[in-house]
Length: 575
Image (cartoon, rainbow, N blue to C red; front, side):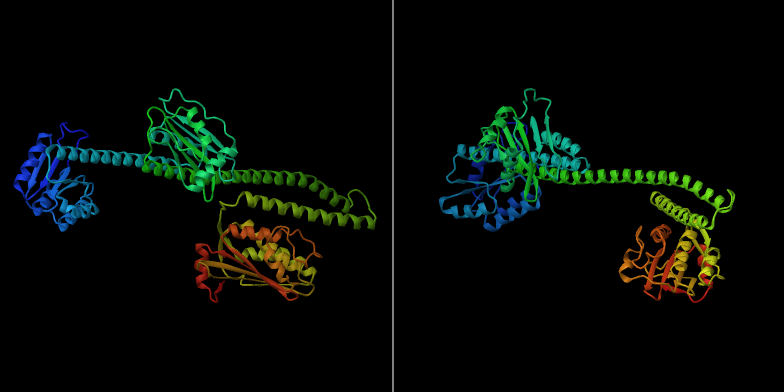
């Protein structure tokens, strides 16, 4: 499509398509327009005009209203809609009696009209004006398209970072360049949503810039809130002045910067504003178009949203980093304290054993009884230290567990053998089922030994005289994901656990309300839960007070364990 030149007489000659059935009228128009430096094509019928529009669109379509029916005008409008970017303008020639047709034509996109009889000077002048308006609109559209593309890139830059200060730097520089301003200021107030900021940018050509006059936060907030509530931007007019009827104090801001064209926009989100951005342009006064104001509001809205999100993410990152430092400090503290406690405790228990064995001479029976109490409490303290150290290691090494196939039946036999003396001392029957099967789970053998030792020793500890503890091992699938798993249950006929205590049972240092009479640290089950979780398994508990408690532990089977589990019968499913 040919584009009209900014001024007539340049190398690009404006094109005019004339449609009129009167041959004399066509000749008259051709002569007048060609003498004015335009290229003219003329046709006698509406059909010929429409055909030429499709083949070779002109800059101006000049047609006789009497010859171009409303149906023809509708065809012109639709043709223009179909041809994206069509630049032609439609002018009608009409008599006084045909003015109703002109009025209908305006509804269909007519740009101007001429009253017949025509004069050459009037035709040329009106066509020139229409061409100039067309060129102005084209340039304005192109300018807005370029500005829109620049604003899009600024918005992409804002979204590319979570650092609020970097967002502000990108926004100031990008907005200043896009709107061809000499200075851009931004100020955000103390607000829980964004960091406090006072920043500015100046172009390389802005040699005579001055600092913004000082304004209190209340003054800035008052103006920002007023503009935010109205959803408006304060802008200069053609003469560079701003309508300050509602904001008389703002003039000092622009006068101090010697700006000739200015825009002042609020930053905010929701119902509250939290800052202002100000654009100053030196040189000649000018007004800002609605498109420019709209694009400024768009990029400022992106900046406000980005600042809020960036501030939130930055704050979260700082909290995470602080928690990480605290967690590391806690781990270091626990490790140091454990070391410092274990060293003297080892010395205490060592000398205590020597004294009780008589290496330091005979001691009275009463003294021996007291020393045995000391020994039992030293053992309790050592167990507490070991449990705390275990928890600390679990927290620090929450991932990267090295696993290998572990023979569960053999492991359970070893734990049961170690607990047999304690069970016999209370006449508690320790029964095992399924220990003759071959079942391997992926895991760390030492950790799994501690898991089952904690569970089974608790069962013995909380089972009264002449009770029973039953340990069963088998295989099945987990209802949640269908993964083959080993299933170990430890059921006792002990005191049971109240229903209210069950939800907190695996919390650190938590002990059931009916268990305080029995010694314990409240860490054993927390260790069990943590270690089983590290093995991608699960642990659950069912209990009835006065009847007993059953713990169920599931662990993923190794490849070898799955093969042998498939050969066994009586598999169960754990929900």
